[in-house]
Image 1 (cartoon, rainbow, N blue to C red):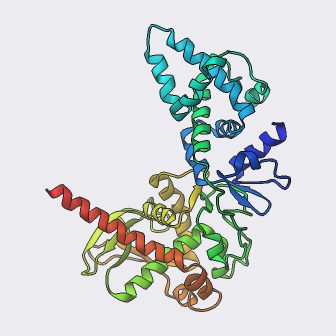
Image 2: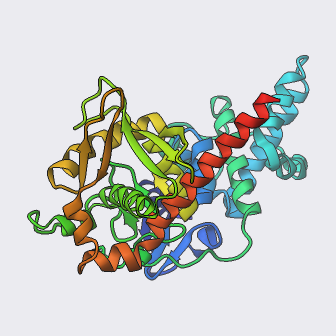
Image 3: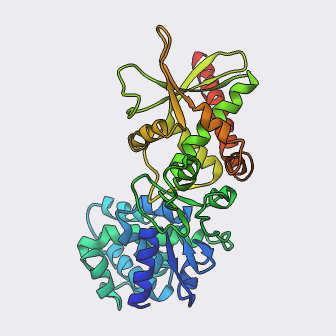
Amino acid sequence: MNNQVVSALSRLVARGFVADGEQALTEILSGIAHPASSGWVLSQPLLQQRQLLSDDQELVLALLGLLPDVRNPWLSMMAARCQEAGQMPDSGVLVQLITQLQGAAAWVESALSDAKLAASPHAAIERELLGVSLEQAAATPRLARILAASFALQSGRNSPLPTMPLIDASGLQANQNWTRGRLLALPGGSADATYVLANPISTPDQANTMDWVFSQPWVLLLAMVTYAQYNWAAEARGGLLLELSPGQNAVQPSHISVLVQGPEGDERHCGTLAELILRVLDHLGMHCFPDRPTPGSLDTALASMIGPLLVKTVWRYQDGASGQNGQYLIHPNFADTCFRLPGNKVFNRTGKHIWQATRIVAEQWRDELRYSSREGAF
């Protein structure tokens, strides 16, 4: 292991992609990151482990822990800490350590014969990343988390993950951009735009509304929601309502309520727009980067996009009649452009799976709530 490997793994965690023309990272990343034509793309298993760790630095060390030469000295350290804890009057200390180690406890048990508290050959890298070397008592909780993550990643290696295609900067190849395993950078976030969907993916002529939509992944996703609503309404059998509760600013709402109508026109309040979006991404097999937001934080992030959607006539806001809430709908002019090139190519061909997913998850969501309310009645 060298500093170049550490820097490369840090870039992967921070940006979602790292170049690896010389395949120096293959031993570490094969089976846990998506291969790309020129490097590696962060995967859902890595994002899941990141959420269980304190910071990106711990994830980098967990990846390094997949190398036996790096991991073995750490196991010796942890074995010594466990022996130390086992001699304490309070057995809870040892129990806590074993609990934190999770599956890696089996690794540590195998290393008991080599237990020793000594700095590893990579102590300088540990200090650079964490500010402390891992043999220090203060670093024991971090070492336990790192080993637990390494074990989980190692155990999850089955076969190479699918190769991740490049982002199509034109946005026309939505099937290529919105594919299973793709990362979507959170609004306002930054990422490597060659393999991670991030706003904007290109800098189009701002006068062309459709090009603007194609260039902004989150805008396209919101446009797909109202396009699903539009197509569903045409069937006159159920539908999707995006409502604004009283007292909110239609241009920058704190949240938009989602109601789903059944075939008979009965409505069920399901949640917020952010909750719907997260369900759509789950259905598509896509993941937010750098981590999955809470519905509340995503609703806040989406608020700043509503105004531009209205100004550029992608969405329109319709005031509610007496006693009813206002609603967001697709703008009729934009709906028309979805049936002409280039809009037709994305909305009815390459990106059709996005708005279809919106309807599928909305119906599933309604059914979940309906069944749960029935169970609660008994």
